[in-house]
Length: 214
Image (cartoon, one colour):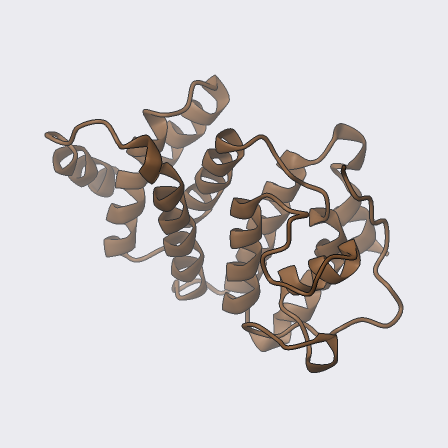
């Protein structure tokens, strides 16, 4: 059953990196989500799709201390977003590599380009294929390297897709956080917002923006 949470409580844990024993000692993004959902205190609650939760934990941990508090308005939005299994896993990974490819280091671009080509072979949605192709066009050297690297590779084992997507998201988020750009925190928050909106019902898709604007 989908849990609906429309607001942040007046008394709330302070967002911090890593795991926390209880709300009194603070919370990471997903621990706070477990708190709002009424679940057992955990950074891996059942109320959110695992890959979206993975992205949220990474964005929480890789954001600066000064900016992390700005993420709190998004926490209620992930409660009840269970997605549609493997399709959601791939979509979150594509969101991450699309955001990261233009700004991360050359080595990470190559790794993400290889992941992008793998994702492209697994998705049927024309919009996602187009997004991958546009992203790869922005990094032609990394794309060409990844194409050569995967030339003799066979199809990816289905059991490894989740692990691959996890690696893509982790590489992308850490890469954005360490990129030579003036706004890594803003980029990380926008990435998380985009993945949340893509999973929300139409009538809720703008809720994080409305909360942030108040």
